[in-house]
Image (cartoon, rainbow, N blue to C red; front, side, top):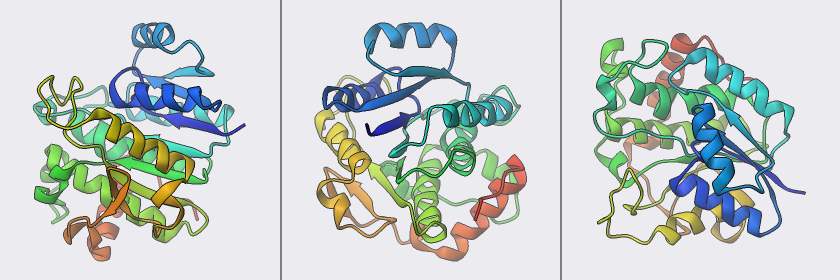
Length: 253
């Protein structure tokens, strides 16, 4: 039975994607940041195989989450859906790093490196990545203070890095659109089903994900062009080098 691991799946797009995959008869491992959130998620998604707990602002908990996830793998796909939004770049997390950088940029890197290779990877990005900066000019504080747009650029770049490094894994990024979630707000103008459909397509390797080159960027279940900055391989490698240094975790061969 195909099995999937989705971070940040206690509500919003992550939870809806999990419910869609479960409705198709697949097995899903969910993730919540605390035991209280896990209890809430279990009530919303009782058919989930298990709900793993880990605060992604903590380097130690993120690494432990990867180890725990491996107990239930291997996975057909790992979906890096967890994310925080505006203002969190100024809020220190459990390890002292800014929460937005830790959750949106560093955690997907660490988890991808430490979870046994799946068939497919999906890094959740945003159209806002087009105004993002890479922040790898030697000023660590600037990288750590990356804002939401910067982090979503990092996610597209990470998808492309792993696409180049791991030829046996299909690695994608996706923009779910500005949809009505806690993050997007009730008045968000786009259809949330378009985001869920895109995530499910990429997770299952269906539709455009069957023919797209690994490293592709999706929106509304179609391949779209990412920003030119995201395609800069030298910048991608500089970003990875910084994430390796900060986390102490290196990409496996």
